[in-house]
Each structure stands twice: as C-alpha cells, then as structure tokens.
Length: 262
Length: 315
Image (tube, rainbow over all chains, first blue to last red; front, top):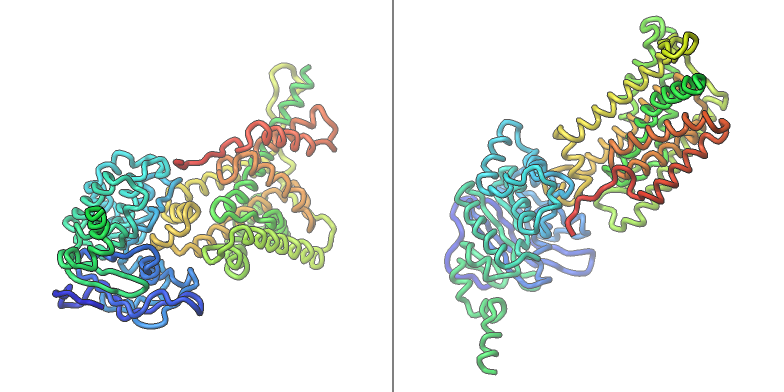
C-alpha cells in the first residue's frame, strides 16, 4: 500500500478495518489484508472500479458476507473498538451503523413517513419523533411527501428517503453504497450537497463507496482506493486527488491526454 | 312473493354471518402469503386443529360449568396463544429452511415451501385420523339454538331468525380482522412486518431480524386459522379431513380479494359466503360450491388482480 501523509485520527476510531481478508467459497480471494479507518465525524471515501472489492468490503462490514457465501479469513472489523465481525447484520445496525444500500431499496409499499419510522424503529419512541423532525428539517421534500407511497417517488427522492431512513436511527456512522448509480448528474450533485449537511447537522461519520471518484473526492477528508481486493492508495482527499495514479486510472487524465495527442 | 322475500332475507343473513368467518379464514391465509410469500397448504388443517382444541376445552366439564354458554367463544380465544406458539415453532424448525434471504433460488424455494406445507397438512390430517378417528364431532352452545326473531312487516306470519351463536361468531371475526389490520398498519411490529415483506434485504439494513418477523407472521396466521376454526365448530361438525371443505374457499376468497391485501381477503371470503348462501335459493344444495367457482372464474376473467389487488411501484 502506498500511504500518503496524514493519519485520520489519534484516538479510537469509529470504524476500523484491520488487515481484513475475505474469500468467497474456497476459491476466490476477494479482499487481501485491507486496512481502513473512519474517524469520528469523518468523511471517508472508498474508491475503485467495478469488481475491485468495494461491495465485498461493505458486505463484510455490514455483516451480510455469510449471506453471500463469503467468509472472513483474517483480520478484524471494529466499531468503536469492539469487534463486530461475525455479528448478524441487524445487530450491527443496532450498534450504530446506518445503511444506505446500493439501489436505494426503499420500502415501496410503505409511505415516506412509515419508511422513516421503520428506519428509526431501534430508537425509543420518544426520541424517534424528535429525530424524524430533524430528518424532515434536513430534507423538507420528504416532509411534503410524507403520506405518499415511497414507490411512487422519483429516483432522486427515493435516494433522499434512503438517506433519511438510515439517519432516522441516529447512527454514528453511515455506510453509503454507490449513491450516484442510476441518477441524473444534477440530482447526484444536489444529494452530495446534502451529505455535507448531514455531517454538519448530525455529526455522523460517513463512509462513501463510489465509482465516481471525482464526486466523492469533492466532499471527503480521506480516501482509500481499492484495486483487485487490495488498498493501493490511501490519504487525505486532496493528496489522493492530486496523485499520479489517481489521474491515470480514475479521473480521466489519460483519456484527456489521449484526446489532446489525437 | 312474501315467502321468497323472507327466504331471501334469511339466506342473506346467514350469508353475512358465514361471510365474516370465511373472511377471517381468508385473512389468515392472506396474511402469511402477504408477509412471507408462502402459500400455506396447511392453513385449513390448522383450522381443524383449532376446532378440535375448542372441542376439547368445551368438552371438559370444568370449562362448561364455569363459563356457561359463552364457553365456546372464550375457548376460541384461549387457543389463540397456543396456535400462535405452534405456528411460531413450526416456522422456526421447518418453514425457515425454505424461506428467507438465505434461499438463493426463489423458484425452487417456492416448490419446497409448497411441498413442505403440503406435508405438514398430511401429517395433521392423518395424525388426527389416528388419534381421534374419523367420526365427526360437534359442540353445541345453548346459544346455537336461540335466535332473535325479527318480524317482517308485510304480514303477521313471516319473521327473520337471526341465530345468536352465529352472530357472536361474526362479530368476533370482524373484531379480530380489524385488530390485525390495526396491528399491521399502526404498530411498530406491524410496520417491521410490512417492511420485511416489502424488501427483506432493506429490512435487514434497518436492523430488523427478518426471520423473526417471519416467525411472528406465521404464528399470527396460524393463530387466526385456529380462532376461525374454533368459532366455526359451533355449527360445523369437525372431522380430521374437514380442512378440505375450507381450503378451496380460502384460496378462492384470497384470489378474489387480490393477493396480499388483508381487507381484500376478508371481502373475498365474505362474497363467497354470500354467493354460496344466496345460491341455495335458486339452485339445489349440491351446486352451492359450483356457484362459488363460477363467480371465481368470472372475477379471474374480468379482474384478474382481484377486487383489491394493486401494485405501488414506479416503472
């Protein structure tokens, strides 16, 4: 791994992945000794192309890897210093890990408000009402539509709902998987602005998994680049964005150069 | 003419009374299907179990002497927790192996579910045959004989008889259906059940134990079958294969109402009972069930999604 200057945090990090290795079945090694740290209230991006292992990492951290016939072959996943590897997915959520899954996966037949209530169902009743108000403050659009069935909303609105639903549980860290997938660039831009607000409003740490490196680097403090199951680059966002390797593979410098040469 | 009106009103009355019980039967089946996507072939045999349990409770001298004429109705409620436990454990030990997120291939899973619930049905039927024999049994509450008599205005001789036991049955069935509807719409448990039905993967991401939600749903569906059986045993003799009589009605009712809709299922069962009872006015008794299927086929032809079927989804 090439480490650039700067470490995320000195005290116990919120989420820590230590030399994690994961394999599917007996054959394919999907992750190899991956290290990754999300500090308190930090925004961390996990970048990489299709098939680099991003989804495997997310599944492992969320406790869903066994469901996909994968297994941890080495290393640890720590949430606030406590090991969560091997816990069931719903337990991990209860420990403070919020999920904004790829494809949004809102409950289509439930209303917007019911979606948020289910999201916050792990909270005591009294705190939930307050929390929902805070979510509505952040996403006024959801308040306007609260009695509508979620399946009838536009893709962008559903993505907002997926964010709001995860936030309803007052998570300490939010895992956001491929938020930009299948959405118009303008809408993606607007939602990324909301992500900034999430940190300001709630102090929630974010782990953003993105194929679109430029987007994610625009808002994160720290970034990791995953390639063929290994972290090949890690560092503060500006350094990662400026690095040669990043330009070559992800930010399209090569294509620009080729275009210039041609 | 007045004779016909009297008969019509009498058939309508029994149609409404029976309709509420059929409605509740269908609600139980639709509930399990709606939450878990499992078509439960054993549902009608859970009713049979409920019928025998109520028979056993009421048959014991103790219960009848303490509770008097309301014993059968109370018994139907007493068995609900027991039936819930049976369904809950059955799911935990058996059904869970064919459902849930771990099952990768949905089509194969459906085949396994069908065969498994069919197997449970056969074990219940034949187990009951071995243990209890094939002779029909029934219980009678003093309320089964008594009726409210409502004189009809057009002459002095006609009157409408409203059987008390059947009316209490009907009221309880409506109440149970409404209670279930409230549970599923407004409570936390209900919302997590609906969320698990809507998108199991996302439900896990929200911290919901989907397998547990399914266990609760299967338990509740079983309990409802038990209660419906416990109520109908007051005017329908029970024998181990009695489930067949109800199975077809349940499926027709659920499809009629629109798969997955609770209130729809209730109306589906209700309509079937009405058709069945009103048909006796013009057709021989043996053709009662034929009319049910004619209506059923008409609905499938004209409105295949059922009365209440709908899909909330944006393309």
